[in-house]
Image 1 (spheres, rainbow, N blue to C red):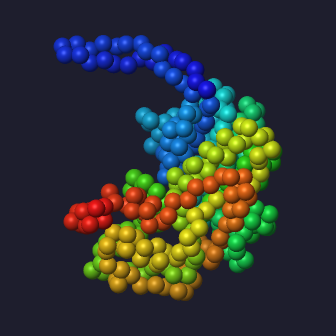
Image 2: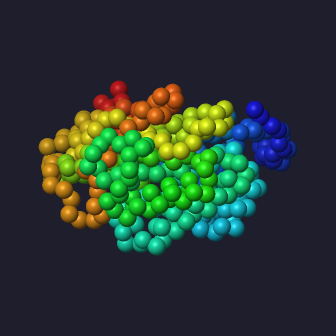
Image 3: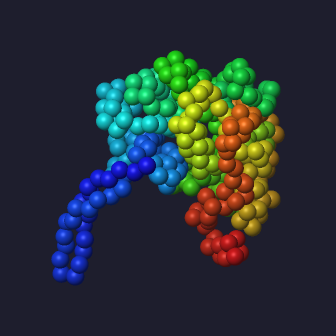
Amino acid sequence: MVGREKELSIHFVPGSCQLVEEEVNIPSRRVLVTGATGLLGRAVYKEFQQNNWHAIGCGFRRARPRFEQVNLLDAEAVHHVIHDFQPHIIVHCAAERRPDVVESQPEAASQLNVDASGNLAKEAAAVGAFLIYISSDYVFDGTNPPYTEEDIPSPLNLYGQTKLDGEKAVLANNLGAAVLRIPILYGEVEKLEESAVTVMFDKVQFSNKSANMDHWQQRFPTHVKDVASVCRQLAEKRMLDPSIRGTFHWSGNEQMTKYEMACAIADAFNLPSSHLRPITDSPVIGAQRPQNAQLDCSKLENLGIGQRTPFRIGIKESLWPFLIDKRWRQTVFH
C-alpha cells in the first residue's frame, strides 16, 4: 500500500546545519480534497491522511503554504492538478454554503456550486476517480421529514437550489459519482463564525445580555469529523465495490433548535442559560429555511458505514479554546 520517494530534510546538529536526502513512505491510495481550508475540508483531509492515504488539499485564498492553490473556476488549472496527481478519490467540499450570501451573490455562488462541480465531475471521470460531492439537507423544503435519497427535492432558497443543481451537474458528467447530503455542521473551528453552531458561543458566554435564539427550525448538528469518516469509509468501500455510487445521506441523530443547542452548550460548560430567549416564530429576515429537513441515513447504515459523536462531547471539544472565563476550565474537564 506504500511507495517510496526521496525527500529533502534539514538536520540540525550543534554548530552546523545539513540538508539530507531521505527515503519516505508514500501511501499508494491518493485522494484530492477541494475546499481543504474550510471547516469540513480540513477534517476530511486529516481523516484520509491519518488512515494511510496520500492526501492533497486544494484551497484558494487561504491555501498556502499547506495546500495547493487552485481556482476551481479555472478549468485548465483543475485539469492540470487532477491529471498530474491522478487521484483515486476526489472529495468536493468547496462551496458557497451561506444561504444569505448566495441570495446576494447568486451568479458567483452558481459558478462555484454548480459550474465548477460539473467540471470537476467531468475531470474525475476522465482519470477514473470516484468523486464524492458534498451537498445539503437544504435541497428539501422541510415539510415532510425524514427524507430518503429517493424523495423529490424541493429547495426553498437559492442556496438549496444551487446545491441541487450541483448534484445534477455532477451526476450528468459522471455516472459513477456519489452525492453526500449533510446538515448543519460544527467541529474544530479556527474562528467561531466558521459554523452556524459555534457562532452562538459568544451569546451563551455573555450572560449579562439577553439573546434571542431561534426555536422554530429543527436541526441535526453533525460533527465534521463524523462526515469525514463517512467519506473515507465510502471511498474505501467503493474501491472494493464499483457499484457504490449515487446519492447518500448522513446526519447526526440529535434533533435540536438553535435555542436547544445554545442551552446544551451552556450546560456543557456549566454556564447560565437563563438569558437565552426561545423565539418560536419562523424567521422573517434572510433566505427562507426549511423547518425540518431531517435526513434518513439508513442507506449508508445498511452498508455498515457511519460514525456519530454525541453533541455534548463534540461541542465541548470544539469550543473549549474559545472559553473566556478560564476558571471554568478546571470544572469542565476535571
